[in-house]
Image 1 (cartoon, rainbow, N blue to C red):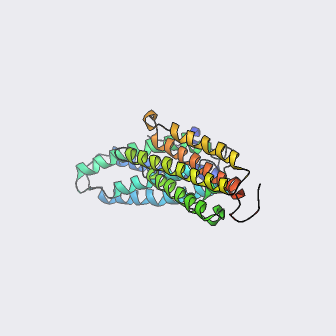
Image 2 (tube, rainbow, N blue to C red; image 1 turned 45 degrees about the vertical axis):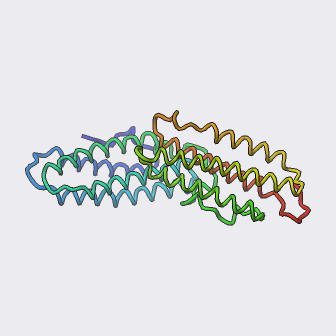
Length: 279
C-alpha cells in the first residue's frame, strides 16, 4: 500500500495536506486493482480520473501561486512537470476501457504512473520549494518568452531582431513543455541551430550599428556577444542521457535569462541614431 510518510513532508502546511490527499487518490486506485476483479469498474475509473484531474488542477494552481509569490527558481520547471501530469491523466481518461481486461491494464498502468510520478516529483522537486534563492521577475510570468515593451531599446532594427530571438526561444520552450522522446530531439536540434544562426546575424547587425554611431560601449558588447555565442556552440544534445526534458528546460531558462538581462542592462544603453548619448 502506498502511504504518505514523513519523508514526503516539505514543511509547507497547505502543500503537504494537498499531497496527502493525492496519495489518498492513489490508494483508491490501488484498491480497485487489488479487489477481486469481477465487476465492471468503468464508472469508478472515470470518476477517479475526473477527481484526479480536478484536484491536481487546484493543487498545482495553489503550489505555483505560492512559488510565484516567493519567486522560487524552480517555478518554470514545476509548471512543465505539472502540465505533463495533467496531459497524462487526460490520456488515461481518453483510453478505451470497455471490457474488464482493458480496465485492469489501465488501472495497473495508472497506479504505476501515479506512484512513480508522485514520489519522484515530491522528493526531487517539491522538497526544494522555498529553499533556493529567489529568481528574477521575468521568470514568474506565465509566458516568460513573450516580447513586451519593457524590452524595447528604441532602435528599430535591434528591436525587430530581439523580437525574433524571443520567438525562436519561445518555439523551443513550447516544444520542451510537450517533450516527446521519439520526435522532439531532432526538432530541438533544428531550433537550436536556428537560434545559433540568427543570434550570430543579430550580433553582427547590432555591432555594425554601434560602430556606425561610434558607440563607446562597442568593445564590451563584443565581448559579451562572443561569450554567448561560445555557450551556444558548446551545446551538445548527444551528451544528454538522463532527464533530457529537465536539461533542456534549464538550458532555455539560461538562454532566455541571458537575453533578457543583456537587453535590460546593456542594450538599453545603446543610443538611437541621431542622438548624442553615449554611455
